[in-house]
Image (cartoon, rainbow, N blue to C red; front, side, top):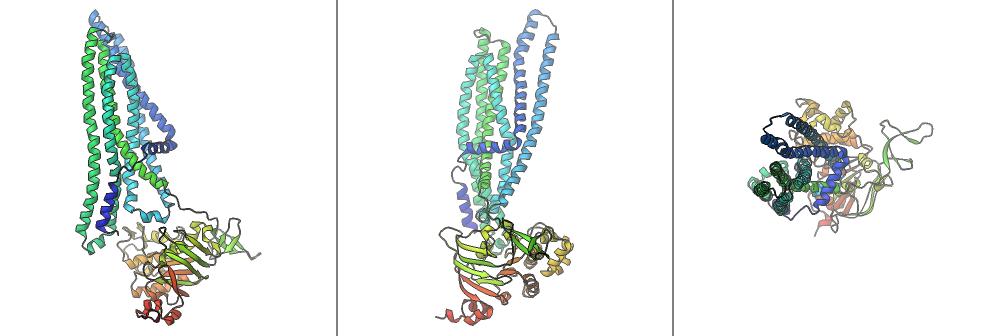
Length: 639
């Protein structure tokens, strides 16, 4: 777990950096391309329905002129109270309004369908892509920050796609159609409205520019805060053991203050827009009422009383969309900040895999005595090359002059050369950070080497399909992870098509069966919180059972029995020895008593093999292994 104090300050400082969204238009266009690639014609229908709805509203406003000038005023002058023509006109308008209402309702339903479908497909694409990312991505990004992409950033996109963009489209069409109607009614009054509107747009540009920076910062601050909370939750035991509650609260306040500062300023600037634009809208309405009243009374421009009433109605309708656009622009900026973070995830380069060789079950043909591929699960495995040729899988793994560094310039392994013959048990020992786990990470191709070669049965592992390479290597890691679900499901995770009987057999092999049966619901016991209700030793035994049910051709055991007490370890070791029979196995162990029967023990220090041999041979040398095993200083360490 990262240190509480310095880490929180660093995360807060990063969140306070300048505008994160460097190319908003490019991000917006990519997002729209993303939406239209999934729901192009549906979004087109929504836009068409929006136009129909706006037409009904504009036609209704224009009807005020017709109502006053063509019906009410003539009836007042003539004294004729024939309402027939008026009722007919009202009926036509009612039909137009009805069409507008239906169009708005269908549009609302379609927007919900598009938004929810888009969110579902985007989450699917994000998760699918994330599964293809190299392990290094998860080493350099906190889990809380990644989780924020699926929660907070997705939610800002939901609001943007479902509300902000349709509202802006609605507002833009409204502005165009209302502007044309106002020009038709009175050009002088239209000029008055455009002058005030220009002032509104200028204020919108200033406020949106200021709030946009802080909305982008807000999204990053949310990710930093979520990451810290996730770390504190997973490391709560450590926090309490070292009584760092106060330090954790101080660090949380640092991150929370950074989020408050960004959110406060973002919403403060965006909050100014509504009142300012509303007041300017009232100013435009009053000016048009004064000027329009004078024009209607004098009759200099042909503006009638009905035309003035319609125009004043349009003034309200014209300034409102401008105000709505200004408000939605802030939501769009925040949505684009979320989209930018999501696209950064999608832009991450997937784990490369050029391997053509695959792992297949094979059997020996009785007639030709050759290996042939079979769909049945057998005890024999083979490597099938791209040309169809099958090579028996024996478990011969070799590293030749391998050099590797996680960070360029900081070499972890130096010209490493080692081999494991088929069926051998190879033990890797050494100080923490010597490079033991790195070797297994390279064999599984979690990382690719800088130079040298790693071969598996004479095949360069870069030519083996990664999924098949990893399927051939059952792993029990030092950090056990259990998933939410039953114990049966957690063990079956090693091989999803395993039967209940095979799962139970694997549990017995790992000596987990006894404690599982004592649980209230046995194998159906539900686990949550990474198996928090189980002891560390029990969790590790389940991990061993998970590897056993996979029945892999080779094994990698990284401190597989590190959290098991001595008595349980002896029982589990028997099962492990049975599991390792006939399999090439790499064992990383600090408890050296578990590797005495290894075929070869490699002592690694600072990324180099300094000793190799059997237990007895290394003890006789009285070198580094002798020191690690006995705690006494050997001959090679004497001064």
